[in-house]
Structures are given as structure tokens and as C-alpha cells.
Length: 129
Image (cartoon, rainbow, N blue to C red; front, side, top):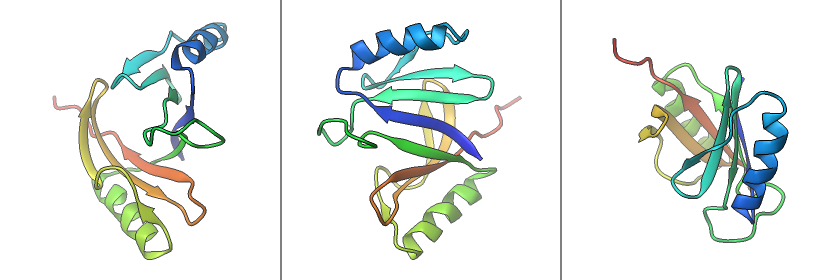
């Protein structure tokens, strides 16, 4: 059901030091920088990330946070976004669709729920043979 969990961090490097240590104790490699604003920790079963909030405000409970739901296709990503907009959600970030990043291609759609919580649908396309 979930693809990743992301939490906000006011001091990104202090948070990285903490998570490198505690997650390292569990056998997870140190965080990898992405876009100069966040670190990702990856495992065979999912990803955890720390980020500076994109809106420039201080990280608070869920500011900078995203709950990611795993999708099976780009069409599901687009349907997720459309259903959210049709049922009280609001669009945020870039329009739904493909993105390229250091971890490869992703299909993403971001929404805020009626209470303002940020969620997304994520699909990882198959790598070309």
C-alpha cells in the first residue's frame, strides 16, 4: 500500500546524523542527498526520507511530510489525482505524471487532503531491457 514516508526537518544535517546512526544500527545505508533539500534511506521494502519543507516554513507536524501510496501504473496515478480533486482535495506540486531523478523514472501525483495533509501516488515504471 505505501511507497515511502517523508518527514520534515529543520536542521537537515543534524537529522541526517541522527538517522544515519539509528537506521545504520538496523543495517540501512546512510541517507542519499536528493535535490539538495532531502535525504532518502532505502531498503528492499520501502523508503524513508527527511526533507526541508518546500514552502520555506519551519517543519512542524507533517509540514514537509508526505504519505506515499503505491500505484500499479501511470493510469492509476492519474486516476488517484483526479479522484482526489473531485472529492475535496487540492493539487500541489507539479501536475501528475512522469519525473526523472537520481533514483530513475517515477510517475507521481501530489494532493492535499481536505485537512491539508500531503499525500501522493507513486508508480515505478519497469526499467527498459
